[in-house]
Amino acid sequence: MHEHSLIANLLSRIDAVAREHSATRVVGVSVWIGALAHISASHFREHFEDGSRGSLAQGARLDIEVSDDPEHPQAQDILLRSVEVG
Ligand SMILES: [Zn+2]
Image (cartoon, rainbow, N blue to C red):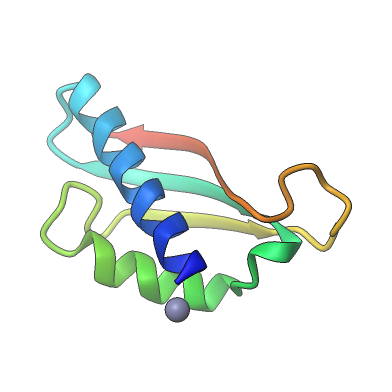
């Protein structure tokens, strides 16, 4: 469940950014996945595609970096690095 709450949280933050900018769609999203979040880039992509269906973020380009550093202070998190809106 952990990964699912991380992804749900991320999607709601992306949605908030898009609304702040009165965007009609989200063009690109850049995320950083901590080593202890236990989610691969491809698995994240699947969840993102599922979770964003019907939202402004549907079809957004994804840039994903998966960290291999378990000592990172946010190793259990998924960080939203940037959101590009259109
Ligand atoms: Zn999953």
